[in-house]
Image 1 (cartoon, each protein chain N blue to C red):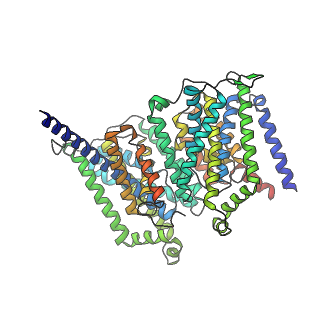
Image 2: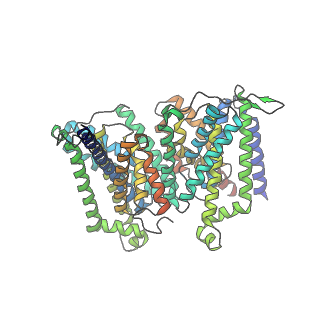
Image 3: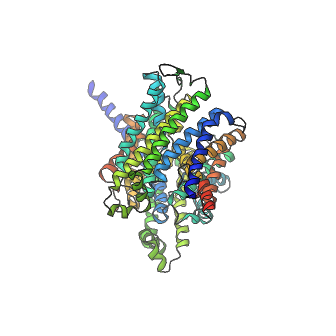
Length: 317
Length: 301
């Protein structure tokens, strides 16, 4: 009973913090677009964790679908339809379809091999974005476009110039995505994923079609990652080939681990810590890459359960 | 009038293709050296060593630092051993703690190390490409018609072949190699039979890193030195392992050579696709034979 109560308060607290973020982030030395970045990358890390923490499948290639979402949104707005919602939709669609195809090829692999193949497949899209200069802008990234105000019919939301309006648009997308993921995890489907995580062989003996479940979990996870990629491109008014690169995938995984893989909100907290740290380090030193690397090593050695994992343990003790 | 022109064209085309096939073989030999080391470590310890490219760079830069003192040949011999020692130290103090935990953690650890190694070499030696001089007599083209066949490239191929033969000799004929192979199959049983598994894993890790260091010295001689030299070679090495077959060293070797040649030939006709083609090959292999060309059934599960 007590655990349930705690969980409820935690949820309420997080939503309250998120809803009021633009109004207090300045006091703690941040700025609104930093808060938006936390939210977007947090969504990516939470989507990855749907697969990593709740299905027990190790993907190290989620940046590919993040980047596809980003390029899908950017290229749609730049070349096809100057509309923000259409851009987001196309971005999500492109990322999800690619994930569906790749997923079908790799669901039979497990563990480190699955990780390796996801990394390698991610690089295909990186090289396409990198090489196809005339369309994607190559190494320089896709620029020369901007997110556009959203016309609701009765009211136009100026997400371009109003940072706060954009934050709340992102928060709305975040809420929908997170709500769907939470509902899925509570459904019989989600329980089955947990069963697969805990003991795949037993789940198979029970007649659960493992491959189909892992494929679905992979596609759902990639769908929301592409959503966050599209939002990330809108945030920066720019798509960067680095968004597709395997080092970005590593960032997502460390966010999930840092916050706590076994908890629903953990990756969001991990993303907040990681984004703030990266922002701080890159303004302090040219060698921030080394420090990020060191941070990875320290987290793995001394902090493998993540922030929420440790808190949970303290509470139960 | 027409025939000589076409003859010339044909000859030039043949030359171009030969050039690219040969180049592909050399690049493939690099991939294979890298991938063999990765594979050794992956098979015995279940660790994807993301820092493998970083170790390659370390080997190259050690050779660069030593060369003024002990010459090219000295550096070629010493640098890989020093790299292997660094590798063994990393295994002893960092990676060993993570055996038996979710492979996610060792992956993240080596991922962080890769960042540190790349940035560290950039910090010490600068981001620019440094020249790495090989002995002059090795740089002479061997034939005027096949201008691309310099002594150095031929030497590299010969050396890689020798090293690979040496590696398979160690694995098949020595006690250490037999234990590594046995451990790959069933580490627990090997341990119960009285083999010190910790030492075995350390040595195996060192052996893998030795190959990375050697590849680093050779690559430096051909491409010059850059902090990113390793990270550009690591992804194709992953592909080589997947194509060749998970858990199979001959497969890894085959995979490395295959993708090298394939990207070389693609480079003739469609240069911009020369990187993507290896991933297409990987997709095809996974579609037809998920365990890879020479992979054993069941290892992937």
